[in-house]
Length: 120
Image 1 (spheres, rainbow, N blue to C red):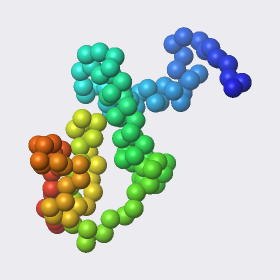
Image 2: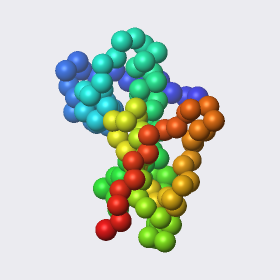
Image 3: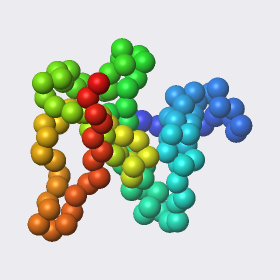
């Protein structure tokens, strides 16, 4: 692939600013709020956060949009509901019609907690 490792001085975060920024974001927005018991739990948490970061989290450099753009949802689509992500640590808000719950199988008792907000 033509890649090689580049070493930098220890305790010099300004030499590797981009990776320090990523590590800081993961630590501040995810790992500081949970207790990790083992490597598998850490992997699941970071994987879940990465999916949230690229699919739902807004970024100022993208004009408050996420890296995977979303369509604007008009009020006619229904009430605003909160969809928990990263184990409930963060939420994504979407409009849903009354009675429709994506990812819910009531016959097996598996329904994700989705909170509806009243219309304003």
